[in-house]
Length: 452
Ligand code: NDP
Ligand code: 2IT
Image 1 (tube, rainbow, N blue to C red):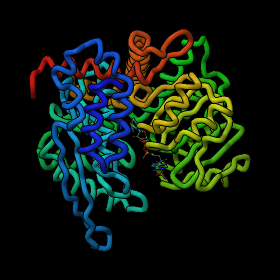
Image 2: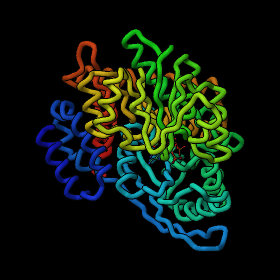
Image 3: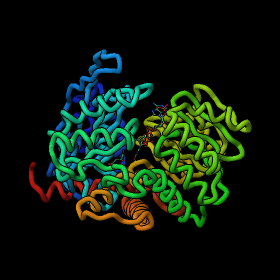
Image 4: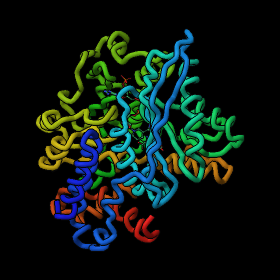
């Protein structure tokens, strides 16, 4: 850390003391960009750090809705429009009871740099609500989504702010929100991504985050002349990201052995094959069941209630559930058991102690904003297709996604090699590389556009 980063971090701490996840995300970025700030005085002269930590706009609103019995509920809705230096605000919506402003600010802050890495013209934003979709009927979810969009619609638009999915928001929720937007605004535009295929969605968008994370892992392994063939992989989560990540691991000859939800994890030593994954997708996406049911359906597997999978020995780990799901001790356990690669499908799944453990052990570590950028990148491709009023084939989109992930890897690798003092010989600090590469493009664009 330099005088400049230390000073701004102190200001951020003083002003946002009640937002630990946001402070964590800022600290992670600041701890790595010092070399580029030292080499370019213009960033401090233009107060770029002071400006970049402050969202351009934050909207907080009431979301009232009635359940199936007519009982009225009120949730809190948010949209953090963080940074529009390189394009319209872009980022997901999260519906989860834990959602608060600090969590959405951490996600929005990360999104700025992630979107910059994709090479596509997208600013950073994030939103959501403290609504819990679990156990709600379709009708209740629809009425909530409609009420949420009734307010959000006045703040977003295809050239202003383009939300998408995140935890608790998938194709069903995007559909209900799109319907309400269209009804209120009387326009059919690409205002949301993650749409279904019949009405403007892109092929491969559902797969993109999971596939992209695996492509990033492939690229990291390739720097060591290695690949995923035969690798034992530990995966957390069983939602959108985890499902398609497990699919791609299978396709590339790796062996995923765990998946989880917020109640516990399943361990299948024979591997979660494509056939078993199909069963899981039906369980999670159609029946909306719990992962523990897997152990009843497949007797070789075991379920561990209330635990996370990080003590299962593996070659590679792919956290795909939520923030801070790997702490320092869990990272140390992974490393002790032989894990040589961590690629993050979730956002900020490893806490700062955990990251330090990976860096000290010099394993291949693909941080979230690089490794999971394939999701939002493919959202960017969905926006392009909507603007052009055409549709690319699955092969075309997958090829573009593959190219983007290769590019992100190269960009992070090169910036790490150029600026991060600990990247030498066999080791590349991708945290530093991704943060610096993402930061420079946004910071330079902010300077170009003056004091706004
Ligand atoms: P889903 O809602 O589809 O799935 C979330 C999964 O994570 C579920 O298995 C869920 O279990 C589990 N989970 C959620 N919260 C917790 C928690 N507090 N503790 C333990 N497990 C939890 O979401 P996604 O798969 O879309 O998102 C997963 C992660 O990937 C998030 O960090 C998200 O921000 C990130 N991400 C998503 C992208 C996307 O395109 N969807 C793009 C880039 C990143 P349960 O059912 O018990 O809640
Ligand atoms: O965290 C993320 O990058 C997402 N949830 C996807 C955002 C998007 O706009 O596709």
